[in-house]
Structures are given as structure tokens and as C-alpha cells.
Image: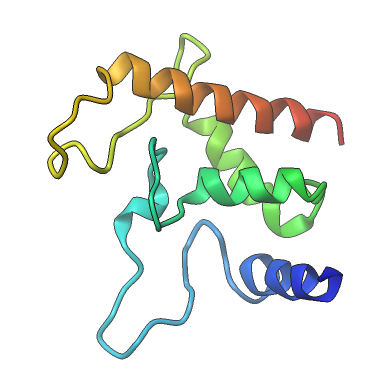
Length: 121
């Protein structure tokens, strides 16, 4: 399991760029733009915030490949010191998840946890 985690981190953070999302795709394909937004909720996909959450849980926020993504996350913080989130399912669901403020609260909570953990390094 540890080797698999190490291989995953190597793939995500060393062989490719989390910010550029330059991961292999089929010919003519592309990585979806959702990767570069702060989203809540997520389904089967992942964004930079989600990957940073996983990396934080693994205790790997000190990895050199994470630093550009942490700087990007900090640059997304507003003047009110919070992050603005987006709901990728807003147009595709019939239920109301909450207004933009509620979405942003969830994104801000997750981003603040990552930010606090990265400052401990």
C-alpha cells in the first residue's frame, strides 16, 4: 500500500504538474476545466483542492511538487480571507444544495484546513 501511495504521489506531483493538469489523456482528449476550480460537492471527479486534501491526509504537504498548488490555493483566497467555491452540479441536479455562500463555506473550510496544515511544515 505504501508503495502504491508513493507511486501515486510520484505520478501526480513529480512526473506531472498538479496545476497544469498535464496528465496523459487519450488522443484528442483533454483534462476537464473543473480541475482548476474550487468545487463543492464533488462526485467521481477531482480538483486541485481534493488532491491537496488527500496529500494533506497523507502528511505529504511538504513535497516539492505540492508547493505551486499551495501557492495557487492561497492566491484564490479573497480579501475577506475566505475562498469562493463553485457547484459543478448546479445545472444538472433538481435539488438545491444551498446558495453560493454555503458552497463557499464548505470550500473555505477545506482550504483553511489545508492552509493550516501547510503552515505547520
